[in-house]
Image (cartoon, rainbow, N blue to C red):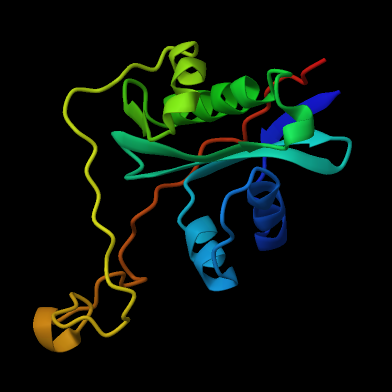
Length: 171
């Protein structure tokens, strides 16, 4: 039996699941930063073994981005991904009814998401790969530039979370 529950994966769990589906493994530091930016996270467990995960990042009010929905290949095709997304949507809806959930997926996954009610949004997805240099000129967190660093921990970005999600187990 698969049980879906709130769970933020460890770096090791994150790397193991993403590697199992063939995604390139980011550095440990990148994983830590990505996981720290998570607003909502769920895991699918078979006993104590994590076999799937999904995360949401966003502004915590209106715009939410579904990321890292991953199911171990041995458990794909058993509605685990659908259960993960349902749990994430429930949690987001509880926090912010009427908000928008966005996602980016490869074309081969479009039918899966369409089956869950997602539709292509108007416009064009655009991207820009930024320099890997940590010393880009004009950084906003330069105190000389802004007077206060971006990401100041004294700024309350997140609100208190509602009670943890308790979705039903999947038979």
